[in-house]
Amino acid sequence: MEHSTMSPAGKFVGRGLAVAVALAVVELAPVSAPAGDYDVGKVHIAQPWARATPKGASTGAGYMAITNNGTAPDRVSCVSSDASAQCQIHTMTVEDGVMKMRPVEAGLEIKPGETVALKPGGAHVMFLGLKQPLQQGKTVKTTLKFENAGTLDLDLPIAAIGAAAPGVPAGGGTMMQGHGGTMQMSPKH
Ligand SMILES: [Cu+2]
Image 1 (cartoon, helix red, strand yellow):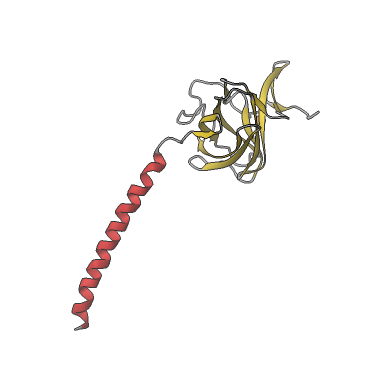
Image 2 (cartoon, rainbow, N blue to C red):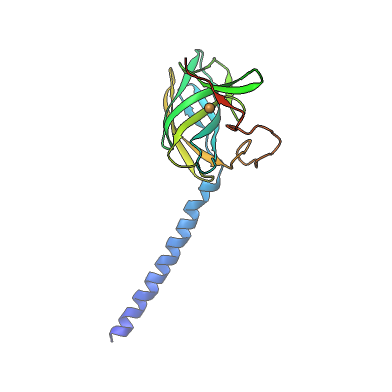
């Protein structure tokens, strides 16, 4: 008797599981879509990303294009990230043939109507004191602060080690090696 009443219940559970699996697959699909852009106040941020780091690295970098659609200049600083003890914005200069990066003290200026591209070999968001290596396929949560536009939380998807851009493999048309051996950190004054 008991056997016959259990049977329909078993079938029902089985069907329920099949539906749950189908729903899970549908829900996972958007993850593979390109990372979204961000807007805060009059500022637009396009294609933010970070670059994976080798084991043992103490620093990493993030990149994005920042456009100021307002009528006043704005200044952006990095407040924090979940991947590192500290977060700064650095610019790059060449001094005596050596590429040097230095922290922007009062925020990186973005003039009205201007787009500032943070990209490998140029200005970048610098993660100092990495808690663990930045792993390809994961994201770095980063908080930026704009003097006028306000505070913005971003998720930076992590691309391959040495990538020149998201989706572009290492060595894809650029010799820039990011924070490699020839770069030096300028002493703070
Ligand atoms: Cu740097």
